[in-house]
Image (cartoon, rainbow, N blue to C red; front, side):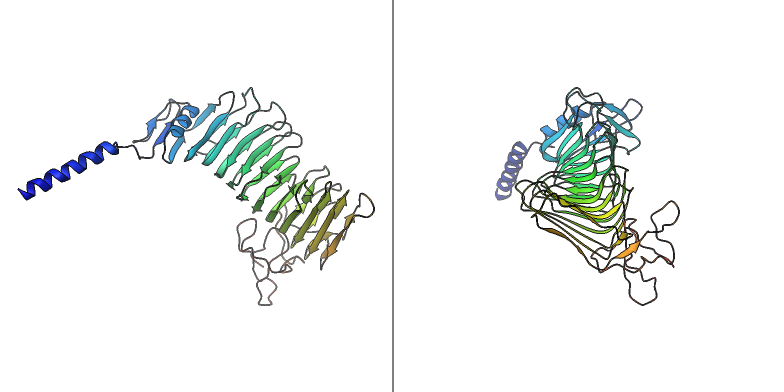
Length: 402
């Protein structure tokens, strides 16, 4: 009798649990988006070829779902794809050359793809040319990796990030005054790692937010901050022939200090370009610290201002024949360029690269730095001068062999 009663009690509890938690309610789902020529993996939910339909289904769920997009070109809705939802989401393509999200047909100036708390990976996004300040991807507190963004619009912005992590992204903003990555205010800093950013105005721009950039190559424009702080390390910046800066800090309205720290850069440019610059057009201060860097530009260090205070601290760099420039926008404004021990001259590289040749006067001349790898992810501190001390080389690359 006792055993029978226990069995009945256990059965009643199991039935109650089954009613309270429906089967499968807490399971994360994979939504499969595909063309007719491909099929879905077993266990995934086949949603046909609509990316937005899959995103809508994931948004209605409460679990960390995945939207897998197969090879092919997918045309976006007129107002852009919307991946903004309250639960974590992964949107994964088949590869940057295989999965193409074509947002060029948008009729309004929304971002081509909006995301929040999402991981975006393995696809190429084409943003529309229409309008000024057109955005490719806007992402908040997410991850973007192995993604290409092509944004040809005038003053276009490839990726607008609020506290997201960008890894191995390629951005090509061919329009006038374009920005590769724009970091906006957020309580978590934007990070850009191992990426290639081609843009007319700036590879990376910080607008009263903060960012950390490392092992990244910028073409056309460099890295700039209007509110900071911004840190750039182990990166190569090839400036266009316009009056761009390799790295720069500008006073921002309402910001007490705009700061930029640069370490182990190689900055190359024409006669109208500047290696490092600080400027003020508002009250406040702007400070740039640059070390262990090659500044092979028209002018190495430039300070300009109309108000406030600007400072540049430079040491252990290669300056372009010692060419430092300081232009003050008016009398009575404090500011200075502080030169530590720097080298003068022009760099020599192995043909077609920014690698230092054997015997370069820049080898083992860097000051101590917390960085462990160079722009090519090679060991940073290699002893090549035979003094028994593993010191870094000046510039973005570290020579590995004698």
